[in-house]
Picture 1 (tube, protein in one colour):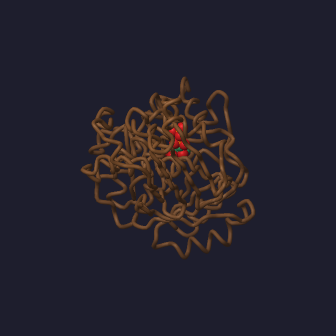
Picture 2 (tube, protein in one colour):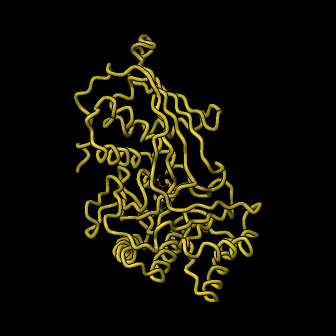
Picture 3 (cartoon, rainbow, N blue to C red):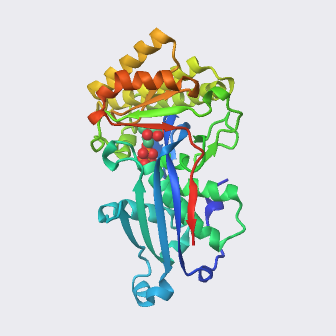
Amino acid sequence: MTETNFILENYNSELINNGEFTWKTPSNIALVKYWGKRDPQLPENASISFTLDACFTLTTLEYKSKERNSKLVSESHPSDFSFEVYFEGEKKDSFKPKIKTFFERVEKYVPFLKEFDLVIKSRNSFPHSSGIASSASGMSALALCVMSIEKQLNPEMTEEYFNRKASFLARLGSGSACRSVEGELIVWGNHKEINGSSDLFGVKFPFQVHKNFKNYHDTILLVDEGEKQVSSTVGHKLMYGHPFAKQRFKQANDNISKISEVLQNGDLKEFIAIVESEALSLHAMMMTSNPYFILMKPNTLKIINKIWAFRAETNSNICFTLDAGANVHILFPEAEKEQVNNFITRELIQYCQENHYICDRVGTGAQLMKKL
Ligand code: DP6
């Protein structure tokens, strides 16, 4: 599929007047990381993530046809997007520039957007300042709401096309958001061993997943709840001209091949080796870029060392991964949940800011909540 497959043509927007859609869309955690992109929001390497469940964004998009609503206003500013944004019940003009950029990027594919007055109402299941990126769940929720409008204009579209285009649009908002439409394992980025994979959208991992990875847990330790020190947009740019960029992109693609095998054969020790190496490689890229950053905090390292010691003592299959920040995602199989939960509460919670942590697990993807 190419970009042109996603351009909506020959639609009649007079078919619809007003209404609203609400989508509940999960966050995701990458096992092999996306770090480095080129225009327009195309990844330099393939990545794979677990879709999460408890960390989600709930977004309602209300739409009202401008023609019937305020013909004069829309005719005097025909090229303007008309939208308001509310976050957790409060009007949030500070969120508008990012959403406007998203609308501008997707306009070619969903040209009906300018024909409506839009109101976006959003909230997250996790605290906004928790250091958990909300761009993946937030942008995919918005993309899905937009697709629900498109579905009314084009009711014949298949579920597969709906999800693909939602992922395609979400990607233009935030790269990792394209992995937050479906579950449980999503690959984004063209990779020769993953059938159907594309730089344009995320696809479900196409092979049978071993039972060891069913219901996998992700407990997120909130080590540093502040705003991120490096925004991901700035972070990705650090990969331009980075001395290790080429090797890093190759390493990630090689890790996709390896993890693809592991997800099928259930080799938990090899899974741990790939996932932890990916997390540390991501941070190594930041430490060796220009300018350089250390995003881990002392407590991040304390947690990692505790995990390694626990694994050595008990032969547990617990492991960690990191985003572009100090928080630690602890991944473990369903079969070990009691043992690992005890360990986390006994030994790791003390390193979290105000003892905050979130128990999450692998989920099945976004859900449409309401349709009027
Ligand atoms: C470290 O998707 O947040 O979480 O495309 O600029 O919005 P933009 O970046 P974003 O980057 C996520 C980077 C990461 C790794 C990953 O999720 O693969």
